[in-house]
Image (cartoon, rainbow, N blue to C red; front, top):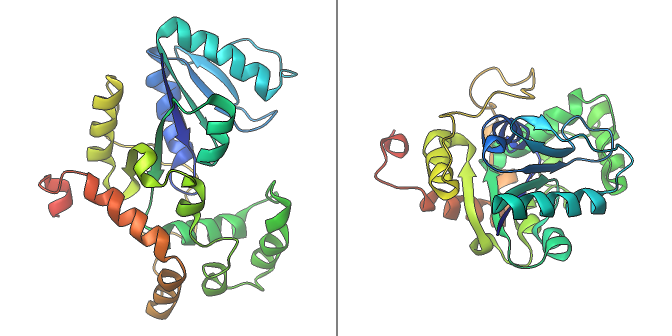
Length: 245
């Protein structure tokens, strides 16, 4: 039995990818999303529909139900806002990890403006003070992108295995070739693009416009993520026409 664990790192198109898993992958394999009680995606999805499970079921109970379904199908995929180490603790070390990455500066911009527009504070208590500073305008993009709570998210999510322990790392900026690679891994036909979800109003074009000095400061404080992103990008076929553009 193959279990794929999809590490959903914030603002890397994980929500858009969830809809691909629900609408395409769940017709071939069971897909388990866990985003907390009451979230519309939380649950086990088969053939595009969520199984009729009680909202009172705990994460552990849902996980057991998912494992039973995956055993029946021979494979399954679970996606959650969880670092790699928590997946290992919950499901053991036989997992195949998949994830999506985004240019680190663009990811931080997306995170910043997502918080500026958010109606609810984050679940993590340790970042709520920063969240309200962003909401009130007291925290600039430059300060946000250099705060230790925000810096090097990729590195922190991949402890203890690093990117080397991740089987598939899609690149948001190169969706077509990424999805082709994932399609081959899963043996399932996938769309050419991810659907557009949660696009901030401050993003006027395909990327956020960032002053040079802000970009340089963010890059200087996120060197591990810059390296991880570059390694993930190098995994994609360098001869592909998409990457030559």
